[in-house]
Amino acid sequence: MSAALLSKISPADAASFTIADLAREFDVTARTIRFYESEGLLSPEREGQNRIYSKRDRARLGWILRGKRVGFSLAEIRELLDIYKSGGPAKQRVALVGKCRERVDALKRQRMDIDDTIADLQAFLHAVEEMPDLKEKAANA
Amino acid sequence: MSAALLSKISPADAASFTIADLAREFDVTARTIRFYESEGLLSPEREGQNRIYSKRDRARLGWILRGKRVGFSLAEIRELLDIYKSGGPAKQRVALVGKCRERVDALKRQRMDIDDTIADLQAFLHAVEEMPDLKEKAANA
DNA sequence: GCTCTTCTTGACGTTTACGTCAACGTAAAT
DNA sequence: ATTTACGTTGACGTAAACGTCAAGAAGAGC
Image: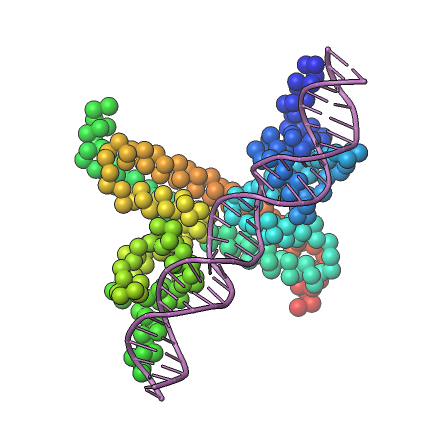
């Protein structure tokens, strides 16, 4: 029973995981993880009818979710994951490398947009902090 | 007639713009710009029934689109724009400043995700470049 | 044996962010 | 006067990314 409780914790260095394990760890629903599988982003083993995720599957899910956070669509993420595992003919790989470079450039542009937006918001924050009534509030605190 | 052609160019430093001007400049459809207005993100003047955009409107649209590029939803962008123009009571402004700071922190985390993703992709690119068959291709080129 | 929990597979609903007509107004060009 | 170009307001359609049931399988504990 204490073993059952410990299994709920599901140590991050375990060899395999249930769908609920990953859902907890990455803070997504099981529905989402199954949806990613239906979209070809994951393909875990089965133990009977139940899904069983390896450490590689887990890392892959992490990659997917980080991709989402940086604004990739699921289709883009699938493309990138396909590029990773691509052992196809050299000519095809050259094309994939091109796509990969484009993605890197896009990310760098996005990074600049983020820097600009941060600068804008911080400039606004500084301006607000210089406003007289707020300075009073701060002084009275 | 040459004046008509020049008007198509619609210099970026003009005092006002049509919806098509902005659509061209920012590479979005007029439909999109009207949609943003219907969502309360823009409120251009009217000349009869036609919309007429000021330089401030234009800058605002630029801000909106950059917001989209960094992954903000339209609702989030509206919130941030509302924060900008907020001259409400000090107490309310303090709350808005909090939201603003949260956004900055989120953007910083997002930037770290982007850096990590760039690093991943570039590591992959370097690995591919070290692959024998591709080195041959490069040598034969 | 029964219940409880966790898992499964559909099927349908929902939100966001627009696209796509349709039908019309208006002003300039021919 | 009429085409042409650009503008307008609805109304409806759509793709992405899930959420939300419904109904059932399958093992764990009592």
